[in-house]
Amino acid sequence: MSDTDLRLPPGAKGFAVSAELATHAYRRLSDLQDQVGQLVRQANVLGRSIPLGAGYAGEVGDFMASYGIGGAGSAADSLVKFGRELEDLKAQIEAAMRRYTDADTGAAGGLGGPGVDCTGG
Image (cartoon, rainbow, N blue to C red; front, side, top):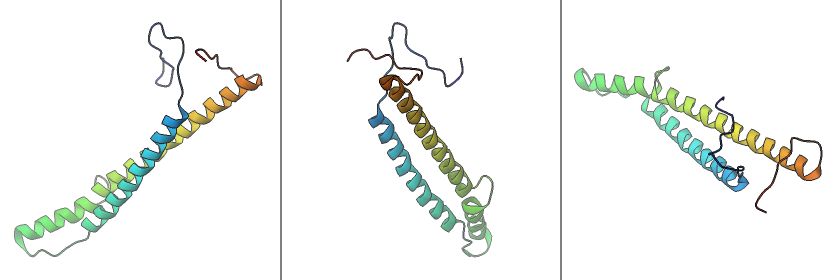
């Protein structure tokens, strides 16, 4: 069984799909993307080199600059990758709901689709 196969608890007769929950999840992911974008901007500001003087303070300033925008492994890089993963997740939600809608429409209209057996009303 792959990660995308449907798994039902023993004795279950079907599954439920909630367009409202999918829409809510999509909206929450969009909100999270907005927050990640703000964090990327803050990390980029952190990545600016601020002269703090020589010695230990200078080392701290250099570390902050490299951590904020220093390429692979930096906070900004990690946040950008996370934002892309959120976008991929949103695309998967859209595709899943589109497949469900197509199957549901096919079952309701008798269009020869895979069909959906409805129970419970």
